[in-house]
Image 1: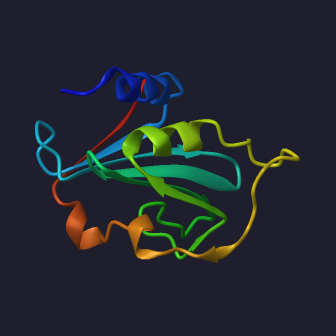
Image 2 (image 1 turned 90 degrees about the vertical axis):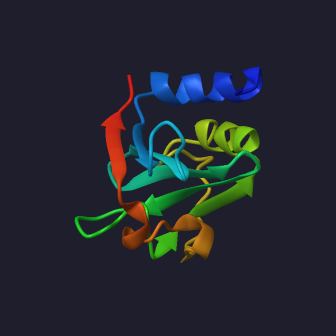
Length: 125
């Protein structure tokens, strides 16, 4: 059962029309990821289990795989509730409060292509 706080943040994710990626069986996924594209970057969250999630902002171009980035400009890891809260309250790209610190993407920011089968991708809304 999903607690009310987590459900609140997942509902906000859906309302803001993030693209959802579900790895494995949708009834019991191995991982859940979502991303929101911006003009020059994307915000991404990966939930691996009920205790572990990572969110990051990745600069994008036509070659960027948002689920296996080489670089990120912001990173946050904690429980799913705190991670969703952080990414959904992150300053928009280009705003004066936007955090930008280019760094190599650590392993928790990646879901290797080999680990993405089967995967279901759909826009939320």
